Length: 146
Image (cartoon, rainbow, N blue to C red; front, top):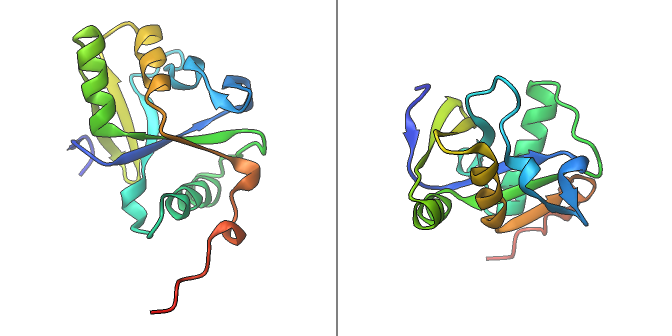
């Protein structure tokens, strides 16, 4: 259901090449665009794959196939732990963020605080970062024999 809050899970944000500094997302990757009310992200658990990498690959496929979005090869997908990010921001500046469903797996990070400050703190919360040029099915190891 749209606008239902997501309390925990892993989210990913596509970061365009201009928002990367030596391949690492900087705060510009997490700023709202003019007129936007939220930072657009995708919920990794939606795809229910075994690894984070597999889920990120599914997000890339979803974005390109379903929405026609063009991921640049030098762009990346930054991964954050939603619960950890919310706690970190609350600790640092006593501000709250919320993540709400838009049209799963698409979600939005909403906040009322200074956008530049929240963007800086979100950039500090990045756990993993996957360059688009390295994201394809050949990166997924075969299942281990049981």
